[in-house]
Length: 306
Ligand code: 13P
Image (cartoon, rainbow, N blue to C red; front, top):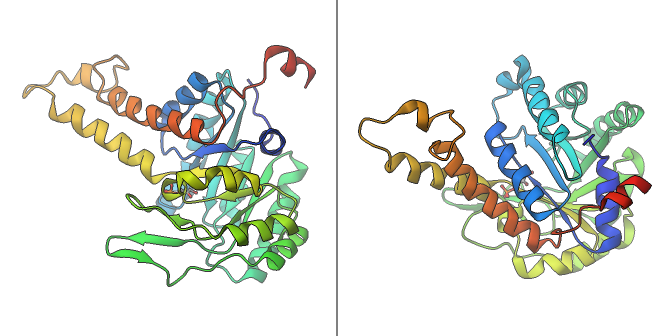
């Protein structure tokens, strides 16, 4: 299926009262796990790759293009609606490369930039992207980040509702990631969400809202967040943990004289990656259900009328 504009996927989610997951992948295996989950749940999905944890030199020496090829080829064989995002690019240039590489949505990681610098860069990105039918996600505010020694609030800032309205108006972004107590890369603990702030942002901003830090977003707050304009949850860390634990189990249970051709790259049940993928797929499926996305794929007559 051709890529579907992110705006269209999010608009339908908003009008029908659910949210769509962006389940961050890092290679073909993990991307396949996400797509399998979405197809099994008959749910629209946002596929893609994030730059935040990835070596900048690797990305800049052809990595962005490799990721674009992987993403587009999986999207092309998808039976559900897919948008493809290059998430948290390190720079404006890198986001532009994402557009050239075939992503139909891009985002620059501006959380630590001065707001005025972010507005200039994101507005320029929007102009270039929109001409080509590519969506842009903006972000204002900076979620706290979990570290080995606890949650680091030193660079965190909450999104100011009036600033958010100005940011959206001046840049022209298609959706906005906000900081309302959500915490990045935090496992085994739930964030505490400032729902009043989210409501206040929703009152002033008309584009769909995005929550980064989906791993630690409280399950009990998902419905209320959707009611306050959230149409996209970004999830990363928990998926890598699921994949990792599947891989670990598979490797530990291998023979002392392993048949490497069966264990690596066979794509059969014996492939260690297959076991890791199954764990990740199960987690993505349960999150899709939490976000209310299960069974939301348009039927054939609806697609024909689109
Ligand atoms: P988590 O890793 O906390 O789920 O956040 C992922 C994310 O926000 C990617 O943009």
